[in-house]
Each structure stands twice: as C-alpha cells, then as structure tokens.
Image (cartoon, rainbow, N blue to C red; front, side, top):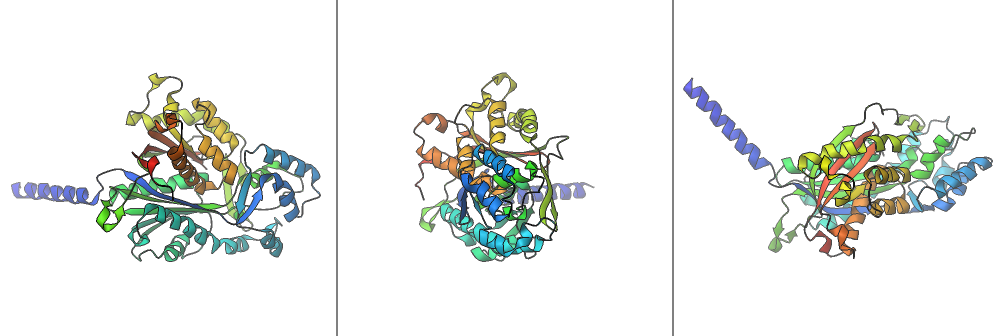
Amino acid sequence: MATTTRSCANSATVLHGIRHRLRADGPAAILGIGTANPKNCVPQDQFADWYLDVTKSEHLAELKAKTKKICDRSGITKRYFYHTEEIIGDHPELIVRDLPSLTTRLSVIADAAPKLAAEAASRAIADWGRPAADITHLVVATNAGANEPGVDQLLAALLGLRPTVRRTLLYLHGCSAGLVALRVAKDVAENNRGARVLVACAQAKILMFGAPDDDARLDKVVPMTLFGDGAGAIIVGADPTSRPMAMEIERPIFHMVSASQTTLPGTDEAVVLSLRENGLVDGRLSAEVPRLVGGSLEQCLAGSLAPLGLVNESDGGGRWNGFFWAVHPGGRAILDSYEATLGLQPGKLAASRHVLSEYGNMMGSTIIFVLDEIRHRRRREEDTKEKDCQFGVMSGVGPGLTVETIVLHAATGSQDQDEN
C-alpha cells in the first residue's frame, strides 16, 4: 500500500512538472498587428445612389431618400467591398432575392478572402519581426467560405507556414469574431510554452448583399448602409524573446490580462443571421440592441474586472475613465450606448469612432483595426492623460447577445516603438 501511495505521489509530481514545463510563465501579449482592405471603395455620401443603381432599384425614390438619411447619420464616411459593379452585373442572381445565389457568393470570395487575410497577416508578421515559419498556431475567424480545405489551410499555404502549424477555424461569429479569436489565442499562447499564434479575421459582406424589397422595409436596408469588408491579423505570444544576436527581439504592444464572455438572457432573437440558398438572409438586426447592451453592460464589465482588483462598487461615477477603451464599433448607436452607460469622457472612444468612420463595421476584423489605431494614437498622443491609462478594456457584442471582454495592459514603452 505504501509503495502504491508513493507511486501515485511520484506520478502526480511528474505530471505537475510536465504541465509546468509546457505552460508559459507570463501572460499572452499582442506582438504585431496588420490590416488590409479590398480596393473597391464607396464613399458613404454616394452609397444610396450607388446601391439603388447596382440593384436596379432606382424606382424606389422614397427609399433612396431614407437611405441617404441613414447614411448621413451613420458616422461613416466610406467603406470597402469585395464586390464591384462588374461582379454584380455579371451575376444577376445576387440582386434577385428569390434566386439561389449562395454558390455565386462563395465563389466570389473563395480566393479573395484568403488573399486579403494573407495581406493583413504579412503586415502583422513584419510588425512582429520574426519569420512566418516561427508561427506555431493559426486561428482564423471568418464568414467567408464553406469548403474544406478551408480559409485556414489556404491562408497557411499563402503565408508559407509550416505543415505542423496547428489550425483552428471559427465561422459565423458575427461582430464578436475578432474577440473570440483573440480569446482562443490567449489560451493557446499561455498553455503552450513558446507558442506564437497568428490570429486572422476576414469578413465579406457579399454573403448578405442584396436588393431592397419592393415594400421598402428599412430593416433590410440598414445592414447595407453599415457593413464593409476588411481583414485584420495579430500575432499573440507569451514570454517575448529578446535575443539581439539571433535577431529575435519581440516588443509587446498590449498584454492580454484576462478574457471573459457573457450571454445576455432573453436576447437571442436580437441579432439573427441564417445561411440559406440566397446568402445570409432571414436576418434580424434589432434597433433595440444598443438599449439591451446598455442595460447589462456595466454589470458584465464589473464581473470581468472586479476579480482583478481593477474596479469596485465604491469607485462611483467615472470609475471607467481610468481605462483606455477598444470597443468594437458595431454602429454609432452602440458606441453612444457605451459612452452614456459608462459615463465615458469625450475622446475615450475616439479610436473606435475613427475606424467606424473610415471603414464601417467589418464585423470581426474591425476590433483589430481599433487596436491598431489605439497603439498609433498612444505613440503620438501629446496629451499624457490617455497614456497614463495603462489598463484598457477591449469589448464587443455578437449574436446571442454575447458580450466579449478582454482586459489589456499597455506594454511599457510600446508607444515609443518606431513606426513601420
């Protein structure tokens, strides 16, 4: 019996030792960021004319006027799309709602999405400063593609990653896809010593693009005025290397302190998208989303940050202004809801509003653009007040409704790195 007990104790010690050796010592960090967009750019003040023209809906004069008003109030100045007038003209099934078009939509982005993701990833790798062959894991979040080999394998081939790279493909996570992918990457990096995880997001609006109904329902038009296309990539790793002789010097941009997810009860019908023969249709994007998020946001955030000792109930009003904020700009109303609910000072969401203005809502890719904008603003920020906020909150809302939260810490000296 004594021998068996000692054997079990020895086994437990061995297992503990193995687990310790396999895990990283420090927290995951963002080590490089890259972004990319398609070439086709449509100014928002021209979108109503462009949209009703390419969908052969010019006869809906009242709808055009309403669409123009929505665009004027959107906080968006331009957006980028995979689809062009030529592509739409060559494929009339894209604008006839009763015609099957899923095969066409997927064929349009079959090569385009991986290539755009590779462009963003190449920039992230260059920003990181190490060879692509050093990437050990790949996490891809996309709504573009329904084939195997999938976007993840195509992207790995385009980048020349090793055949042993461990791939994870996340599909149809909506606006929170980028945060979900980063949460997965954080867990991978911290539980695999030496892991370097490439996170890539590529989103394509063509899956939901279509002509308005003749009854001019605005709920079909609003998504057309909001979403755009883009790709973002991030390198995630723990225990950054600093070996000048080997040319391996990793400079963390943000440390990823914690990650959490909360599903808001009773909101599963607020955002719905269904993949059908004619694309991502039968969807609902409720106008109540900002209110629903605002009603639960503070409780969600407190639940994520209180265990870290970063906030407490006695802090009172203004307690959220001690953080920098990377909020997914789902739309102007979502950002307004965050600002009003949390009592954020003017400028706290400047990076998110800037990205919304320049690109629209690119679903999961958008948060990567926001992080990139924040790191550049922190480098050149003349007002030291925002630089003094070392802890930050990355937050986004996806179908469910699901609130994703990642707590960040700005790496010391990250704002002083040389521009690329």
